[in-house]
Length: 485
Image (cartoon, rainbow, N blue to C red):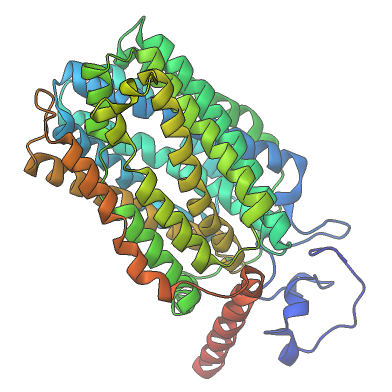
């Protein structure tokens, strides 16, 4: 029987309902039979008991992915805004742009709010509408930014709105995937990110063409329209009013018990350290523009190539690596990233011209290969996170996984700024760019020291971990309630 399907069952007693894995995946005949481990929404007779599996929910998820595609053109346009309007160099640009991660680091807050505080009994749809409206207004206000502090405030606001949208969309995605097989979960996440990355590629390329004809400020204002489809589609999504939501302390107890497991904190720590390593992306942006004289449209084509590579990496992982254990996959992919991240030296020292390879061709091929390998390293964490999220705290738990990743990106931006400044790399002095690339590449060897804490077994064996965590947490909370009475 498919997970979540209604079935006639012999009623279980109160004593053995709690902590019974089979009961947690099916539904009883009355609302009071629903325990802490059942899906977020209370099933109605004849209903699957999971509104996240409806076509309207699927459309909402993909429209949210379309809205999040604003990240691509926003990242491109903000770089040009800092370069042309504020006159910043590579180090300062890396520092100020790193603040965009704050909006993503606080993802657990958005998950906590949506899981704990429903609006009119609904956890997803109302937040979709409110956040999309605020995000659209935020991008429009880029047209009135006059100081760097105003820029940072709008940067954080717009990314926070896209972050909130991703929390809702991915919580729905977790509800669609959490009880499925590893192959199905991998397919669900891969298809979601294929849609998102395709939209990012198209929008970024369009932004690059627009930057040749209008200012970065105008391009940022145009991104506001991307939230329109969410506002059109999300009201049609049906969401069954939820059963009593978990109290904040109950949520914290489940999340705390989840992160007490080595399988969880080990993988999360590895990803955090890997993402925290410095990079030379900001300096290479100025190298591509000021030395190689790449146009705005070609910079957008590079982003388009990166999105295509990310899709290729997703397909590669789903078809060939989804059954590979996390430890060897992380180890090999990290070593590949170390080697491949040194390849920009070929372009910096102009060796590619000696080989007869055009700068444009080399930049595209190099970007494609590096991005594809990084995607193969990144997508297993998403699949792992979806399978470890306990029921009724999908938004909070999944957002916490990703916020740790985004915290790493913010740390990477700060470290990149410090290292770039220490080496004296600036817009007018790129002499030490090669040294920056080497140091950033070698720093990626540091996460390999954490491989022993990454799960070494079959990923499929992690399937029941979230159910076990939720069961233990429910038993603890129930005992505490009985004792308090």
